[in-house]
Amino acid sequence: MHNRRKATLIGLIAIVLWSSIVGLIRGVSESLGAIGGAAMMYTVASGLLLFTVGFPRLREFPRAYLFWGSLLFVSYELCLSLSIGYANSARQAIEVGMVNYLWPAFTILSAIAFNKQKSSLLIVPGFLIAVLGICWVLGGDQGLNPAGMVLNIRNNPLSYGLAFLGAVVWAAYCTVTSRIAGGKNGITLFFMLTAAALWVKYLGTDEGAMVFSYTALIYLVLAASAMGFGYAAWNVGILHGNVTILAGASYFIPVFSAALAAMVLSAPLSLVFWQGASMVCAGSILCWLATRSRSPRDAAS
Image (cartoon, rainbow, N blue to C red):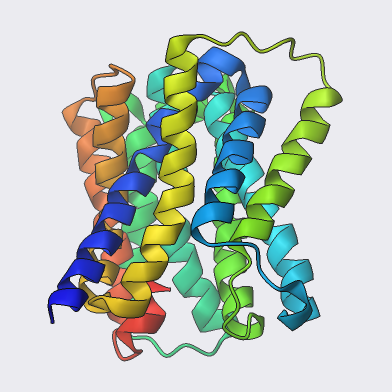
């Protein structure tokens, strides 16, 4: 029982680490650039994963998982890091991160559509509330304001588009890999491939040289650690901890993420923003409850 509680605590630490990613990625991009900063971050995180998780034995991996897992994971991480890095301001970076947190609702919809996951009618209000929460956030201080939301998106369609695409891609990754992974974990390989893709993109653009400073190095180490150790800690929690607690806690990541990003980036958020973030969490939880007949371990995966 003591070991299970310890593993659960480690899993909860992973949630805290992941919640800090939006603010830390933005801090890295402000110092080292959107592309170069992301390339450095995933490179360092890959090194950390090599020591904590190790490099997988690729011969034992299903070929379909290696191909689709690599393609979808790298695509998602590129969308996530670049959407935050390309944001015009700290507040916009937090909003972009919130758009990305549509992935839990999208994942459950994908599981219902493609994996024949059983669900109740709660899935309908759950999904609608999650989407309404995003619209509430993007409407600015006026809340649900279609004109304001459109104007906000037009201000930086690339960042918001990448964040939305990332949510869809991650839902596809979760749906596809749950069927073809065969219990294997290619996270170290996937991080290394993400770093390689970002370095290729960096070398092919004119983003400019990265200027390192103590602040940049601190953000870089913290961001890479949050990513690398977050995945390692989550793996421990899922395998040995209370998965029901971890699954429930994970759906509050949007609120945790916004709170930590606001502190890290010194970007105060309005009451309207918190209302929208709460809707995103509530909608995701309803979607989860709609499929509560499945095992908790599958829910947390």
